Amino acid sequence: MNGASGDMGKSVSAIVVESGRVLLTWRDSDGERRLTLPGGPACPGESPEDTLARYVKAQTGLDVRAM
Image 1 (cartoon, one colour):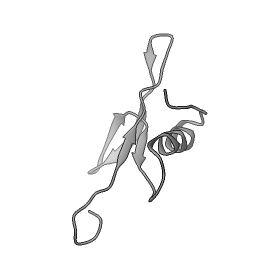
Image 2: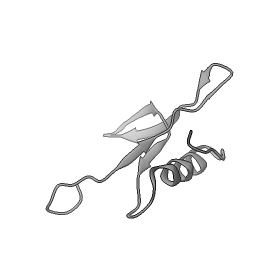
Image 3: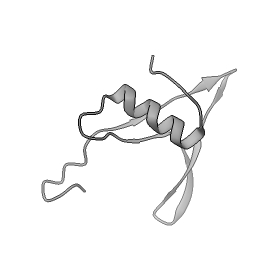
Image 4: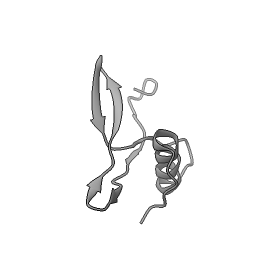
């Protein structure tokens, strides 16, 4: 949670498909390792498209753009 308000903010997830395959990333959550779509929370003032591109680049090394 983010402060006393309980506002968790905005997050994005990317669905990256190439040749009929979907890209997934590993994420540790609650002591378990899980496959998830790349993504994460936005920084204040950041657009969803910029957030998506930033997380996909950080988590996979790929340069993408939102469609």
